[in-house]
Image (cartoon, rainbow over all chains, first blue to last red; front, side, top):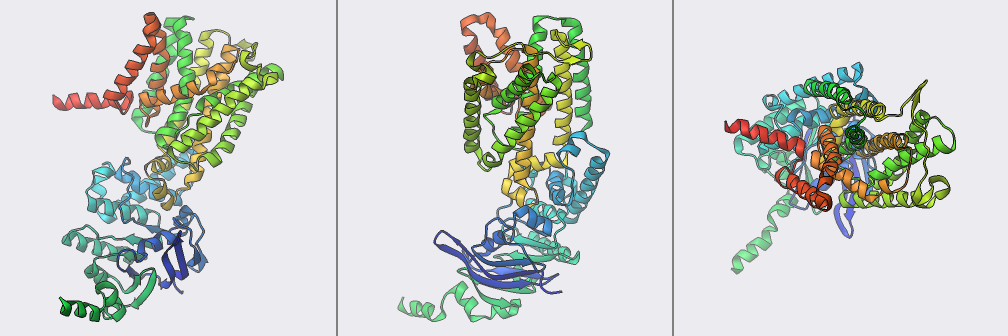
Length: 263
Length: 314
């Protein structure tokens, strides 16, 4: 089987500003791949394009060889792509378990009429939703807090909840937008272990992250973006030694030296 | 549905069914018929506002569409009131669908404005299409409901009819709120975009709940038409839409129980305040103001919180 996600000549502009400027890359099944780049490089925009939040300006996004750009977000979720958000987006007024149960929505069927009449079939489905969601909660280690309001969780737990909710949609590909941003060092280690466990159950992972230590540790492949373009792609070791990458992050060597000598 | 809700529902059913035994065909029973009719509308509105987070300032128009469709069909076309009620559901639901499809793409204040404009248009039609609606002076002699040889004619008859439907509406609404659909509605309220990304067809659910709330209002309208047997436009204007929203908010927007409590309070209160003559509006306003200041989550949740606080203190 080829790539699970293939992005070709992807472009996105907002008014006159081009946020994503002709990007190509692929993600292979069961891979952990990272998108990195300075602020404003277009990383989150790419996530929003993949998950259907923004329409693409041009180019194509293929998921398992099928074109998915132009589809509504909920259909993309049904197809098997889920995600977390950079600014954690849990449903605050709902309980932790209900948050995860919402993730089961796209894998279940009961509509208004079945719900209104509370048919046996509906109750059975609801029970299955609950059981599956509890499994996902224990997968991320939040099962003890299942009945608390999501707003009561600390930041790290909200991130775990988002992952449990995303897993409840049974994704084949999960997009993690800055999974360890704002986490302490031990919390980051736990998250890395969780990411490995997600991969072990057969899910492909594409992540955006600024914590370079974490990215280099966890990713098999890294795509480096700058100003909406891919400037390097390869193993962590390859991109770390790439001249263009060093320039994007640290600026030109010569110019820096020149400035230094001047002052 | 949770057990607690089922118990409360059974108690409510018992109490409401027993009330006429004590009151007979009195003025109070007449007021309680209106509490029931208003509750039907506010239960639907609370699903729309409290659960899905969508505001409608046109609910009185759906109430009116139900009433007029039912009234016109039964009076001018000889359709039986039951069939007219059913037809009104389809007419009102259909109109809600047509209005909702574009209007629900709007958010917050804009949706409120769109539904308000819709309410005005319907109100103008009630006034102007006088060959059907009788214009501002309305029309009467709307037939009453009939079941075989039994004619619903007294307040007691209508009381039972209305309150059985209220309990059915409550049962349906509680089932919905505790289901996959209810969860989807609440997720739309909490974060529409996130809900969509997580796999909820948000546009579809918003329209469905909008139509359902219109259908509740339509049934209430049909009951009203065949109870009062006379229709004119004034009960279905903008003012009543605001009253309905107020009922839901005062009762507690995120609960169908609250919607019923709000409907009861705002229907009964003005009747009692008549004793104060010219000052009734002032007192009415003050009471609403006090509730919103001290119990901003509405009576239902507010009283629960107060009880909890007191318990914690002891």
